Length: 100
Image 1 (cartoon, one colour):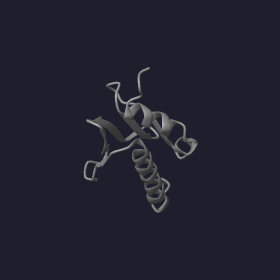
Image 2 (cartoon, rainbow, N blue to C red; image 1 turned 135 degrees about the vertical axis):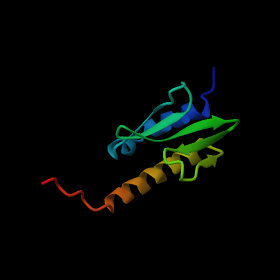
Image 3 (cartoon, rainbow, N blue to C red; image 1 turned 90 degrees about the vertical axis):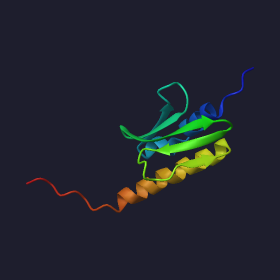
Image 4 (cartoon, rainbow, N blue to C red; image 1 turned 90 degrees about the horizontal axis):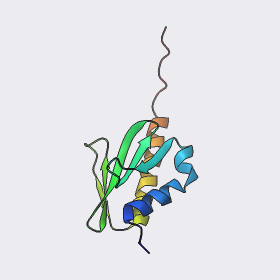
């Protein structure tokens, strides 16, 4: 039996959390067939890649710091925290003015 790679395991765990989708985010396999791409709506939010035995987060906004974690559980936790921060930040934005 072939063991799941960390990125595949991460994809499955994030896909199994209904709050990810309910908050407007989605996860899918990376374009190259590896890694995990995280989308906010239709917009690229960031991605996880496996490098050696670690998972590396690359955010869409490259001015933000990346993250390197050792386990899938840490990657799930970090992803959920980023989603929460993103929701919190968008809740504090003033509403857009309607066009006249």
